[in-house]
Image (cartoon, rainbow, N blue to C red; front, side):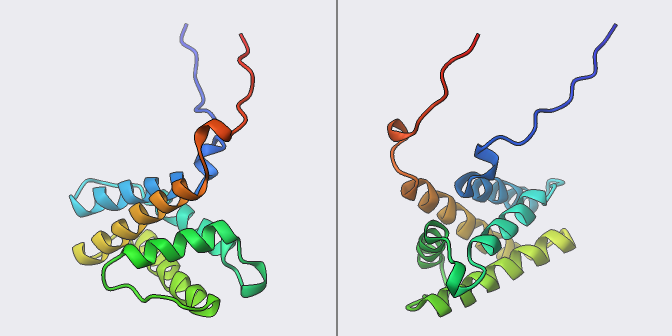
Length: 142
């Protein structure tokens, strides 16, 4: 008798900006090399960044700093000197992610640029999250 196993629900890590950005980068990389790719991760990242940077009054500081650092590292990206400019640049990035996720395709140049920003965003978010040994871990249960 075989049992049907259901996949586990999303973990806390899946909701983390660094993990979302890394998953989106992998999906975009698969798109570049021509593998069939589910672009759900790209849409999830777009939603997460959009939620963190809704307006100047409700900016999530970690998302803002990580996004700023990622855009600085990306080639040919607009550099922001004010919060309004950062919101505009992040909004453009989100729109480009949503466009790729909705269409399921992008030019190689567009997908590579988005992947570069996603990798930089993931690295920046990890750097901002602090050292792993400072995080509280749940006790082991057997």
